[in-house]
Amino acid sequence: MLRLRSCTLTQLLSSPYTSHVSPLHRLLSAAAASGISPAASPGFAAEEYLVSTCGLTPAQALKASTKLSHLKSPAKPDAVLAFLAGIGLSAADVATAVAKDPLLLCAGVERTLAPVVDGLTGLGLSRSEVARITVLVPGSFRCRSIVSALHYYLTLFGSMDNLLRPLKRGFWLHGADLESVVKPNVAVLRECGLHDCDIAKLCIRVPRILKINQQRLRAMVACAKVLCVPHGPGMLRKALEAVAFSDEEKIATKVEYLKKTFRWSDTEVGIALPKNPMLLRSCKERLQRVAEFLISEVGLEPGYIAHRPALLTYSLDDRLRPRYYV
Image (tube, rainbow, N blue to C red; front, side):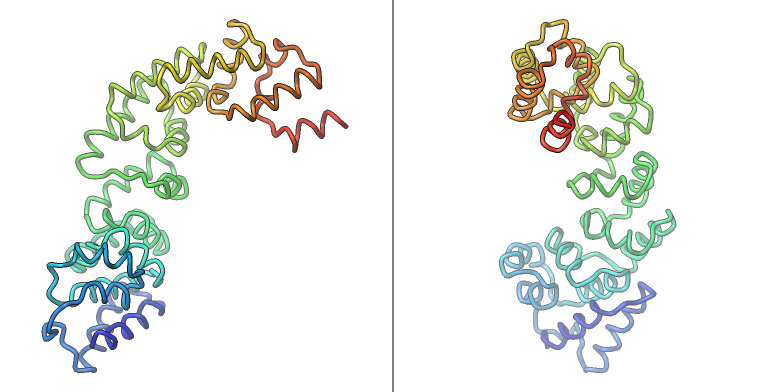
């Protein structure tokens, strides 16, 4: 029985559908034609189902099955899989989503998943984008609050492509966390002078900054302002990115390394860092190689480099050496 149901669902998952309702109807029709009644199932072997029907590895299925122990039949998972096939998820997508969040298989199709899809498409998302969201944040996809959260994040990040970048790195907050953490942090960033476009760029690169408490965020802002004086919104954003999640001791150590490596005085390092705060994030080994080339081989003065720190961002082998030799 499980093999027959698996074959039916596998066929559904590999076939395109234009409606998110029709796959469910086809599944039920196929089950009726085969004389299969989910309610008549003698039991639900979750681990076997996850492997044979959802495409999980045995190890993934073993871990995920503990969250499905309450299920008595495959009726609800069957309906969910049919629905996911209907909105364009491939078999591989389904396996990824279920492995991340096995409870997705327990979501109500008519009560939750269908309204969520309608809400997301109402925001202007295509079916392929909805499917992508499902794979990246399946736990949130089975909550209706994802619609209002996504509306906020799309406004904040400016586009779906921008939002997908932090989502791929595991960022997501919705519900109470969105109201109590994310929105207040965005307000703090606006208060310190960042424009929305700068906030979006910062959060794309350092999405964790939206999840920390306000006291820590304000401390980061204060450190960034000290680093780049005077500071416009764009430079403050770069300074925030440079000092994010680095304590004062770590920053002081890196500043001393820059002074030693490039033979800079306090004044010269104070000139270089406001122009290029990301030097604090640069690899020490790379900085050492660039310093040896610019100072020892090219013969540049430390003060000259301090006033032009952009030189330190260029590739040594692909740009600096070839141009110097030419």
